[in-house]
Structure formats: structure tokens, C-alpha cells
Length: 326
Ligand code: PBG
Image 1 (cartoon, rainbow, N blue to C red):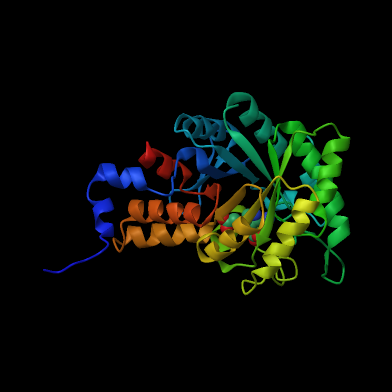
Image 2: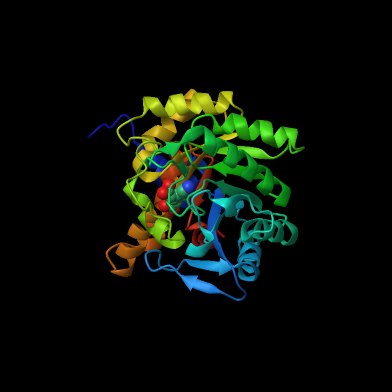
């Protein structure tokens, strides 16, 4: 008779056993839904490269947030989509206290307080250049000048009701400057979720369609990270933590699971991962063609991101996944 000393299959025999020994959990509380807000009323604008996803006016945004909260989704990451005429060289709309964005943040905070609000801090939605920082005459992305604007912008978001400001710009020194500005202005409890390891990625394509924010010249390689690097990610995390970050992010997610794990081993703060627009679009496109089971692939990827070490997942699947997870 065949003697097999270990039989791992015993622990997979029934659903009750499998549930009992499952190492990783995925719940709606782990998920953050990115949402795009536009001016207007009852306005719903489909985004062709992100099937099933829309830009929403503030009234519909609040409605969507109610639904997400009812499903137990942990939070929302808000992004403004501005018309071209509101964009300029200095990204002035980014610090307009009466602008669309602070209005949207206040509305969500007031009407759906159960949701944790993350606000995006970067200049690309507001800049006619489509870059995350201010651009010099010579076409250079200006670091320190940009950091000043980001700090003012963060205070504006905090005042409107942000729980975490989320700098996604990759300028050097921005976390420290933002922390100081928040503290000085009386917002010691508003957190910073730093996009620490944000890679110069081709997976952001559909998002740039959503905000019409593709760079007008060049690319983002002088500030976003080289996809080839992982030790540099640890350096960025070390600096952001020293400057006062409360959470750090890896972005994109699926192609960078090793980076998530390395940061998990290296640090002791919560880690967020951003499953970006291109990752969403690939799953949706293959599912539409009937080539994969979209719902199952969605949950499998989200679980894998959690298994790698992410506490929080920013995902366009937040609503769909939360509905499935029940
Ligand atoms: C820009 C920003 C980007 C995303 C979030 N914030 C795009 C970029 O860096 O060009 C991408 C998100 C996505 O692709 O889903 N500050």
C-alpha cells in the first residue's frame, strides 16, 4: 500500500474546514472606492476606457457614497474632473476654497460620515500642463514650488472634511511640508496617506482619460518611480515615514505585489495598494469578451493584494466586490 506521510488535502476537504484555515481575509472594510466628481447637477458621465464607471456631480456622488457605506465599504478617494478652461499654469483652482472639490468633500463628509475620505493631493487635474507639479519655462517639474502649493491644498482639503490627504505627486519633501501645514492650521488629527512607491506606469491610461489629465508634453519619469526598482521604494517609504506619513501606498498593485511585501517587512504602518484604472479595465475587457469570469478574477486579485500585505485597497471594484462579499 502506498504510504503518503503528509496529506495537505485533508485541510481542504470541506467548506467549513477551508473557511477555518483560510489565512487571508477580504472584507468591504478593507476597500476604498476612487470617485470622480464633476460640476453640475444630476450629471453622470461614462468613461469609455473604464466600463461601468462614471464621473458624477456632487448630488449623485453623495448618493453613490450612501450606497457604498451601506455595503460596508471603508472609504472613498475623491478626485475632481475639471473642464479645460479651469486649468492653468499655476493650477490655481487647486487652492480655490470655493471650488468644486472642497464642496464635494464637505458634502460627502456631512451626509455620509461613516465613510473615511481620502483626498488626492497633486496638481495634474488642475494644471494645463497635465503634470503633478508646476512646470518651469524650460519644461522642468519644479519640486519646492510645487510642495508649497500641495501644503496649501492639503489644508483646504482638511478644512473641507478630509480624513486623510493623499499626496500622489511624488515631489520630494511634500509629506513633511504637508504635516507641518496641517498642524499649524489646527488639523493635527487629519492623516497623511502617502503615495510613497508610485511607479511611472502605463496602467494609468484610463484614469487620465477620466480626468482628461494626460501630460501635454513628456512623461512623469522624473518624479514617478522606475518600475525596475524595489530598494528605492523602501527609501521613499523611509523618508515619508520620517516626515510623518500615517499610511504608505504602493501603486499600481498587481504587478507590484513584491513591493507591497517588501514594505510590509520593512515598516510598521498600514499599507495601502492602488489597483489602478488599467488593472480594472483589463479585467472588465476580458470579462466582457467572455474570456474570464470577471467576478471571480476580481475577488482573486483583491485577495492576492491582501495576501501580499496590503491592509487597504483602493479599487474601482469596491462596490462590485463589496456586493459579492455581502
Ligand atoms: C495623479 C494620479 C494618477 C492616478 C491617481 N492620481 C495618474 C497619474 O499619476 O498620471 C492614477 C490612478 C489610476 O490609474 O487609477 N496624481
